Length: 159
Image 1: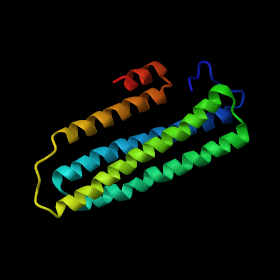
Image 2: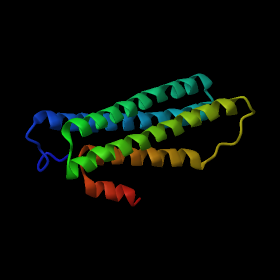
Image 3: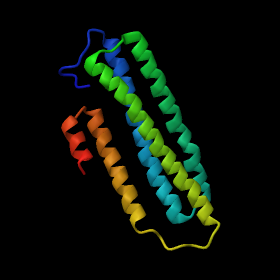
Image 4: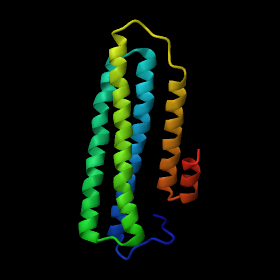
């Protein structure tokens, strides 16, 4: 929501849209941290830390529920049109995708607990690189989303 061409007559509407964007960004930041934590527990074979990663998935789930609620409220109360409607509906889809990323991080942590019950296996060399690439892309796309930078978002998509 670029302030130069998308300000509304009602400041409260802009504040609601900004709050929605903030929730999405917060979700993404938690997901990035969860990916890093999941990779760390795999490397260190730390089942207790893995349990914390699994428990922390609730924070992302709660933010997704909050985003869904906020979207429904915005749709009912503000009846957004055109660009605003697309942004509000995109927020719903983005939240769903970030929630899925959080689930994947929690699943990695769950699998690490099972792996800790067996003898150490050789590390999968591509896994840390894959996790780092995913985290970097998520961080970059969150920045593009925060700044409403469509050009940068497309660049990230093309990586």
